[in-house]
Length: 233
Image 1 (cartoon, rainbow, N blue to C red):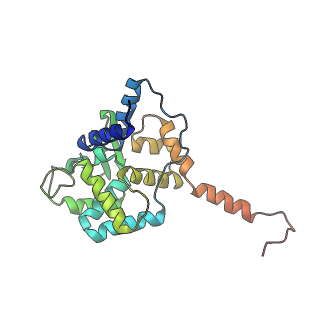
Image 2 (cartoon, rainbow, N blue to C red):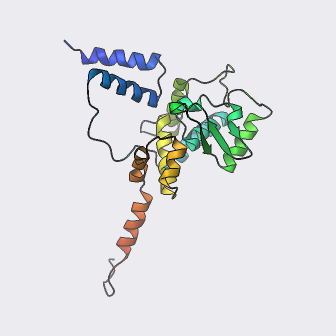
Image 3 (tube, rainbow, N blue to C red):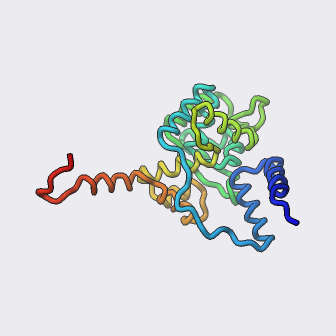
């Protein structure tokens, strides 16, 4: 007879030993469903989880407080919205300081895309790189590349140090920044290109998650009243 607990343990071992990131895990489960002849759940969430502005600030502050290098790593992961597998593959030569761009060469599907970065982040990365022209953008203590699992651990540890109660993982940073860009008025199609989504439908969920436009509409509607209507005191 099927034993869900034992099966879940086997799945957990596969994910852990295979060093799968968020996207890799999703793809693995998709393949498993297809082979088993199962359909994906029909109930799709109409929002994504994210950190609030206060939580994001606490998170970044805790990262820099722990170590300046960790702070820069976390900031880069947040602001570029890279998948963790893409982040650990970044090389020094993937950063164009002249154009303030990070080139993602080994993203999902093996396609190349350009991710813009701010002047401030570019200056900090340039100081971090120093005279290096090649090699991992962020070298591990042993001089090689970080594993996806280690980045996940660093993100989790930093969230704990920041006192954030919710579960924080690398893909949550991607959700958080994408929602911020939509709130800031960046066109969905442009957000799609930066995220590397193949379908615009995948990106639209960030528009549904965005709250600032909803809050602005509420403030306007709540403050408007017919002439002669007394204000509420």
